[in-house]
Amino acid sequence: ALTLYRGLFPSLTLDLVLQPDLPPVRLDEEQIKRVIINLVDNAVEAMHRSGRLAVDTSHDPVHKVARIVVADDGPGIPAGDRDKLFLPYYSTKGRGSGLGLAIVRRIVAEHGGNVEVSDNSPTGSRFTIELPC
Image 1 (cartoon, rainbow, N blue to C red):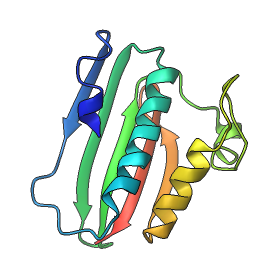
Image 2 (cartoon, rainbow, N blue to C red):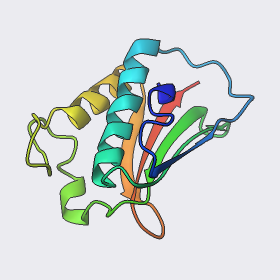
Image 3 (tube, one colour):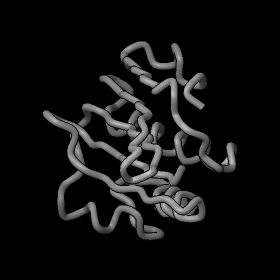
């Protein structure tokens, strides 16, 4: 999914850190690709196509989950908006349907996982997806 963005935005740095020994995760590749593209598109737009975007994967053997983290150094998301972000038709943008993050949550939930948003220190947003493995 991330190859779509390589070189597309000259002012955007894309850091990809993939843990090499992730255990197998049962998933629909196309649906998870859709999730990643949606999160990356939102981050790129929030950063006005300029800044640093990181996508990391990791394994938490204690909780038996694989994690995908999409983090940006954009303006961040106000705490008051975080509870509403995943609701259908809610949008902080002036355009779009407001369905993107609702679809992300639905796809992740259908895989038995969870998605959360938090601050990315020192600036930006961090979306963390956990999928059972």
